[in-house]
Length: 387
Image 1 (tube, rainbow, N blue to C red):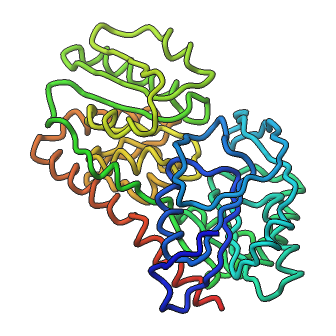
Image 2 (cartoon, rainbow, N blue to C red):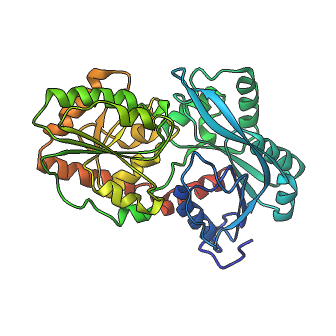
Image 3 (cartoon, rainbow, N blue to C red):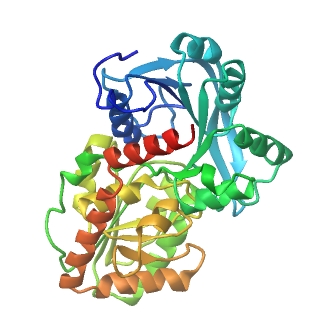
């Protein structure tokens, strides 16, 4: 445990905290680093060092991390619009013994599964330990996922928490529907990595419509639907040169590459971009496209806005719902409504240089509001209030 002088030593904040998570992702590292400075003994317990669906980066040696022995199982779930999603679940051993050694005053458990069930058992045996459950889902992502296990287990788990953490309004709507009182809910969104604020768009707008996407190439992300409309829109605007660059990979890669395109539309798929190179990737575009049918958050939205990109995105993503305001930081559309996609493309193409510069500045300001220091301070104040 990292027993070192910290910023919070003269505050009533807890001195021993454990954070339970499937894996430490690249975009969560700054959040954990700030917490490790605020809490005298901050320890992360992860089920796996790597999840194939999530971005990773080298972990700082300053973070105290224990990796449990876990069995990773592929899980196929049905998304709200009826699409099959492949994710991973972990069956881990050693959680209770690890918590017993750490003796945390506070546990934050990520997601509503085996780790949270184990944390509840530990807190039952150690009633002085308080439990906060982090729910990254929303009313959109959980729509139609109504199997008996979710209906029975999730409200039971949430009732046993001292507080529930959510990403945004969609998460609040979901946990309230599970019976959680508003006073026990705290908005704790994913934080902006300061490194993205250190990069700014390489130039102003050109005659091209430069679009970017970052993430998995899977059906729930709405890429094929968006590309179909973009292709038709490009054919109707032959003088508008369009470059659509995508960073990521997934089962739809072949279909994206094989899509016939008009001469004025170029689709480029960037291979093997590391997380460290993503700021430069965003900086070469003018707009981020995020057409997801459902998304617990959408880190690409926040990262691109930090670089200065307004967003053309779906409000089915919590990041878009929270951060993208029409005409200020981007434009909204639902991925299953072609007329809305066309309207967003029209708006982007018709945005003047002056208005674009204003939107770019406002996008960065929205990302700054979610820096780790601010999010962690508000989180710790909520934890103190729930004593």
